[in-house]
Amino acid sequence: MFWLRYNQALVPGIDLRVEDETGKEVEVGQRGELVARGANVMGAYWNNPQDTALAFRNGMFRTGDIGYRDSDGYFYILDRLKDMIVTGGENVYSGEVQDASNLLYIFPLCNLLQHLPFPNAPTS
Image 1: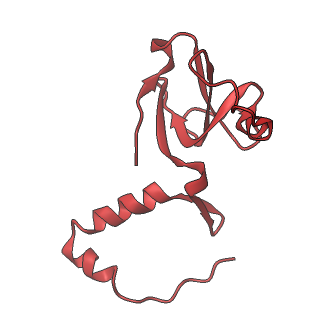
Image 2: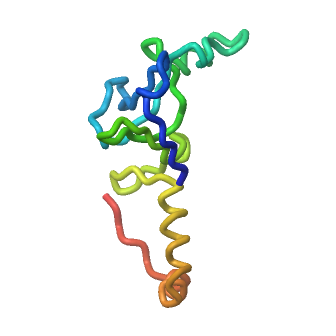
């Protein structure tokens, strides 16, 4: 998992926020897509109006990164939107799966258990 600590108050002229899939800004601590606007953010894809239209919503560039903002105003990048898996009605990010898998190697018994076959639980 990649964590970006960025405090918007430290970088004037850059508007960065976290939005849900409808473009509404989410509450502090909630996950969503990071969107940005500012002089350092591209304005369009060269000769590609279709991709430009998909990349911008309400004047904000959709980064494709999933993250959240904490109560101190810092932003954290968790994963890429396209790497998200929806399973059992939950959003699972590939970075979270990788982190959990890496933790299993710390404990020898868990390392053994992750190689034992178990049937999948049914999902609805």
